[in-house]
Length: 214
Image (cartoon, rainbow, N blue to C red; front, side, top):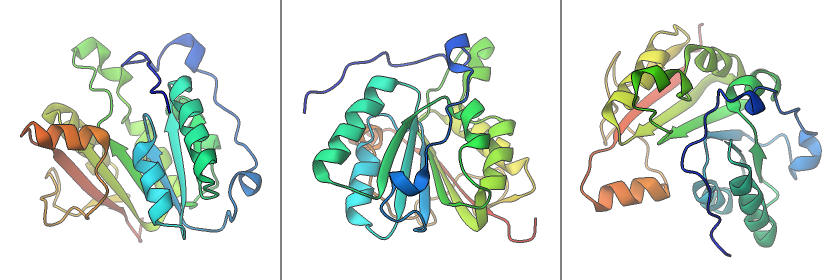
C-alpha cells in the first residue's frame, strides 16, 4: 500500500480541531464489543495496533489520531486484513475522549512518542495534560494500565509528572521515576521505537496502574 504523506505535526489547539468527534456505535464497529479494550492515543500510521490486533484476537484495539489521511489509510489496511477487533478514529483526543467511551471500559492505554512541541509557548499543545489524565482515570478499569514512551527526555518527564500528580494512578517504578527495561512489559515496538533503538538513542518510559482504591 502506498505510504501516505502528511504534515509531521498538527496543532491540536487549531480552531478546526475543537469540536469533539461523536462516538460511533461500538457494537457495530467491533465484532465483539465486550472484549477488553486497548487504546492507543496518537497512533500515527497505526502499524503498532495492526500487529497487536493480529496477534491478540481476544482483545479490541482503538487508535486515535488527529491526522485524517493516516486514519483513512490505517482503516483500509485493517479492512484488507479483515480484522474485526481493530478501529482507527480521526479526532482530537482532548475534546473527544471525555464523551467517546463508557466509564471503566478501557483496560490498557498507550501513549507512544507523542509530538514533543519543544518551545515553551507550544507546550500546551502536548497530548498529555492534566485534563487528559483525569479523563483516563474515569475511563480505565481499576487496575488498568498506562504505558508511556518518548525519545525526548523532557517530554517523558512531563508525562510522568502529570500521571504522578493524579492520585488515582500508581507509578510502578516509584513516583517521578522512569520504568526500567526489566519492569516495562515486553511489547511490539513501534516504527519510531525501532528507529530510535537502531540509532542507539535512549527511550524513556513510564508505567502506571489505575489504583483500585481511588
